[in-house]
Figure (cartoon, rainbow, N blue to C red):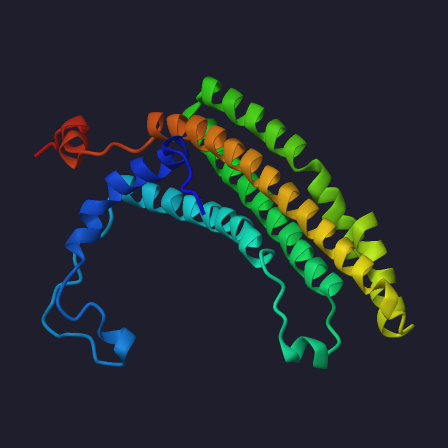
Length: 254
């Protein structure tokens, strides 16, 4: 899978730059002891607590990680739809090509909906930062991106909602393929197996193209969201230097 463009990583780069000193300080011998079931090393300091600025960016680092995770799942859908597994277990459980395609499409729709919800949560949290900072320009950017996200995912949200609450997801290619599976297996019309294979290839090609196009547009959307929101978050981040915070405090009276 192709790596996203550099602009996609704008939020990651700022968050990483802010928190990497803290992460390096916490690297010590025995760090992975709990992973291997060993007791934690004794006599080592736990290290300093994150500063307000570091806590701020650790939170946004996590937000980016969750959105990026969903984007990875969407791109993996293309790999899953590359080759139908002709395994005996599929024939034993009577899983057809139509079942296999539909399973991955429904999983794709579900992950797209998860991405939509994660982007909405991310924008709501940025909006809170803008409200606290009284950043009118930032709030205007958030409002614009929220409208773009809602409009971009409108069809997917409708399809996913209908699948969950009203009916199974279906389209013409999958409906035709289901019919051919039925008549060539239960109906034993072997003469139509070549048509079944043709419909399977056509459905597979259609959905691979659809998913590829959707993912490209979704990536562009994430680039725009990360770019504008990184500017808002950087402009309103907590003070980075503790020394500057001390200078701003009024002197204590004796």
